[in-house]
Image (cartoon, rainbow over all chains, first blue to last red; front, side, top):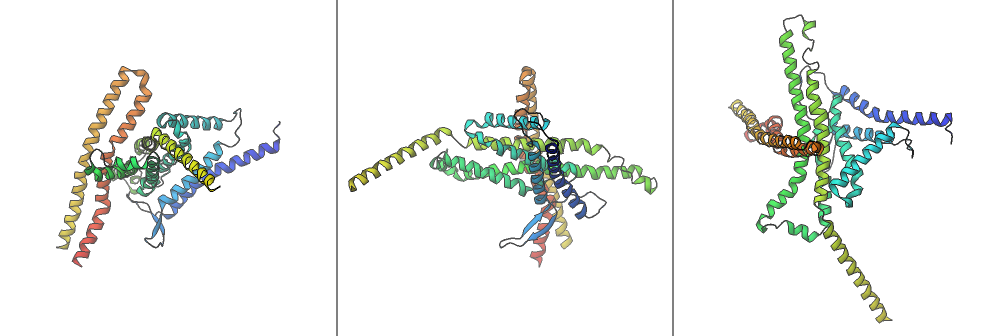
Amino acid sequence: MKVTDRQKRVFIAVDVLLILMMVLPIVAAITLKVLTTPASDGVSITGARIFFTIPMPLQDLPITESQINSFLVLISIFGLCLYMTHGLKVKANLRRQHIAEWIVEKVETMVNESMGDYFKGYAPFITSILALSAFSSLLSLFGLYPPTSDLNIVAGWAILVFGLITYYKLKSGPLKYLKGFLEPVPFLAPMNIIGEFATPLSMSFRHYGNVLSGTVISALLASALQGLSRMVLGWLPDALASIPVFQIGIPAVLSIYFDVFSGCLQAYIFAMLTMMYVSGGFSLEDYLLRKEKREKRKAKNKKSKINDNLEVV
Amino acid sequence: MLELAVGIILGCCALGAGVAMIAGIGPGIGEGNAVAKACEAIGRQPESKGSVTSTMLMGCAVAETTGLYALVIAILLIFVAPNMLVNILLKVIG
């Protein structure tokens, strides 16, 4: 089959559209930040900016920078995924297909190694957690507010993971799950219940604390360097004194650790802990035993029903 | 009088934040131990460097959690608590 000129042109056009879909959300976020941030001289540490609030019956729902940024990241990742998988062929001739295949293979082996065969279908979920968390933290490279340094966003993911853990614990035996609270001695039950809720709490605090501490330390360093360069160049005329000598380059070293390394590491750890907790709360043997019992009961019910019918006849 | 009360609140918040960060000692020692052991393990078995490093990073991040709890408390004490406490004080005074 020969590729015509027209097909080639369409392919490139779609490519360009997908790249735009990847880049435009980030550009939009930067524009929004530039337009809404009031001009100020000093370096300040603030939380997410609240754009507007939606009145709700219980409490007003504030729409903040972190929500908008996280949705923009979602759109951007969606565009990236579409771009990576655009023009897939059996015999790969595009570089991006190799990269996409490499990512899929890596995550699948990781999931297989740490979760076991039963959880094979978890690879997409883990990949999306990894991508969302990593890209959200990396957003601070553009000078934007990283959504992961807002507790609400990370707590949402952690609650989702907590739901999954509880679901799998219940799946391998509700009675066993309830009994687990009374071990080793019944009067420790409150401690066990607190321990159960500590899982999502520690997961969200770990992720959010790491990213937030990076932001705070970077801001402190930036203000310190600003002061330093003013002190050193203060005796010069105004035009020269405002040159940011020390602010060039030095914050970048910290940024490599706090933004790139820490962000990616936290994403990896969040995904790893998700896998460990979810697969750790589930025991395949108990589940199979329960399934067998249920099927036996069903068969029994069927038999008795047939018998009833026979008697009626 | 009011100035004194507000001053006490602000000062105690700052003190509390500083005291909370003493918790940083624990994760420091723990992570140091973990890294030392990982270095030993790599020295003994250089071929297992990849898995040792990833396990160590994972363990370090988990050990860091207690320190981060302290950090969260300190940040709350510095950025959130003063406002809240002063508001409560003003409400009490009327």
